[in-house]
Length: 267
Image (cartoon, rainbow, N blue to C red; front, side, top):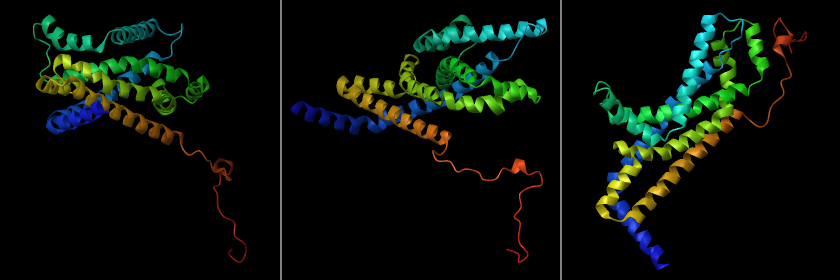
């Protein structure tokens, strides 16, 4: 029990000394990086998902079949590389490797641009497969019906398929956001001042590693738990109300429109 009181006292002291100067900027940078990168990664995933599901057949012109095969191959290589390698190594390669191989012709003047690019590309690789699965889960009859009325592939995706697929992949989007909140910690390898980097700086000054990283652990849990609750709320809003009111009148059944018939007395 004495140890718990001592731990609480040390945590309070550390928070009073480094809460505003280290932890709060780290929390802000972590959340901004995770939210922006997740949003960009979702856009990349949706684009890759649409490209992967472009319809093709043996009767298509050879040029179309060649370009579709090339697009699918590029998307597959991108997904396999960035999904199959650790984010920390991707960050090292993009931030340090590109200037090395290009003799500084390609370099990042802003470390934030490099960090957002790394997390976005990594998230996009995971989202590409999630979006593809979400698109496949939609009844093919809806795509066939859209083709029957003359809609293009892009129109079918944006107006019919993707709005439904979005609801199916919302849990995966939430998982990616939570993963990005935690995995931004690996970006300290390129000196991004996120929460873990700020914690290391405070630990190097105060030499109280357990207490400082205990605070960091609690902060990460609060951020991920809050994000999880918000995403669950968004999912419930997308599902709509649980109780439905039956529509007693169908406007499509009366081509002349719906109007109220009054009696001779005007009632």
